[in-house]
Length: 544
Ligand code: F6P
Image (cartoon, rainbow, N blue to C red; front, side, top):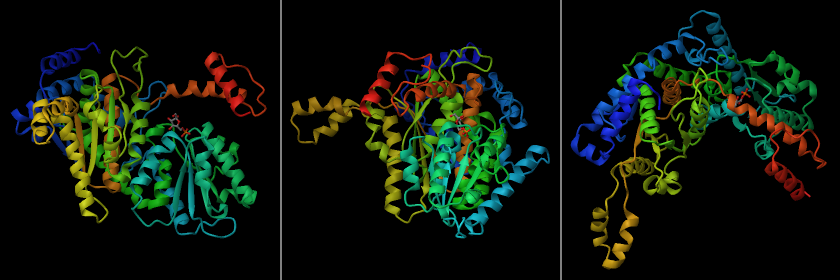
């Protein structure tokens, strides 16, 4: 629990309303949808299927005020060092700001965007040639985490946007099965590798880049022509040069942009290569519109703030630690993975900005897959399991395909699932339905309990008019701001990620001991235990 007056009021409000059932709330409040939905940037957020009402929103907004959300928002946009453990601002919003402020940061951003535009156009139009004079046809983007998940989610979502002059493939994992799959069928002479790493010593990306270079050389690309087939995106030109890539063609990033917030930067190059720079500019424009809404809308009509507050209500008051992202659109299938990093790497922390224990649960466990697939995978548990989960349904009113019946079925399923979660189905209703089943009384009595749905399970539904770069930009910015507001509410630093370092250190020690000769070389990492020892021995045994 966070020991503040607003938090205690919220706990008291929860105790006083916990007995209410969503079905009852809807029955008593015919105007519930109108009261508990908000539109912004063409998106509609229906939050009426959450276990709350306008009083709850009032208490949540009071908490937001008490936790300084408005001041935190101002600090974020003003470029203050909101990332206190690294002494950095978090200026991902500057990457998509329209009016250049004329300061150094704006100039660097504008210059980089212009370089991205020129570079992507010369590649897409075949002006930039490979070593044998042929135009490049495939881009292989090497990056991981924020250097992968955001660009991949956007490229997948915009697969039908803009002329497809180039195919873009992604490789993130150090597991070479992914690299091999991406390189399958490619001609080194017509392949461009984008090595994307903000810091540049990220082990997975470096190993993939070394193997890609070896593949290109083995495929006939002369050493002197490698710069025609490799471009780096990084905040670390020295390491880029060390690695043997050309820092002169490197597209810069900056340490005031967090990896999971970086798709708006040069890390978004694959978006421009695949769909054209106009698509990236449209993405920026949609996000900019959401930035404007976030900065100006009153807290109780502010979509990112409401999404954040509802999340705190679900996690900290209702005790729902996970959030299922259910995009009812095939082209949003990589969105859950991006939001996983955005939410869990930003707020998956247990100490606040001052290093003191946060007395409350923080980031949700984010998971999910597109609907309607999820209905055939995990919705059984969402409906009838003992561990409920909050759900964000994301639907798009108008499809970019021409199969009207498919789109109707998709949307009907999306709305039906959130209704079933909310409404449930009582034993009386089940018995009434079974009465016409022709089963005898004993069979009906035996079956009925298995067909009861507890209901009262919360969800949000986000509705986009269409899926295009503009609406996608607004959607992504919505979640970015939600995460930042939740970080402020819990008091955590949403912009560092110290938790990813220790595992890497241990891995380096174990890697030495898994050397090909099978001799346990290297110094045992201090965390060696019988499990790790036993597993290393078993790996050697299995590998013969
Ligand atoms: O997961 C840790 C992390 O540092 C992320 O924050 C980042 O997006 C990813 O690794 C990749 O980092 P880089 O872009 O520096 O290779």
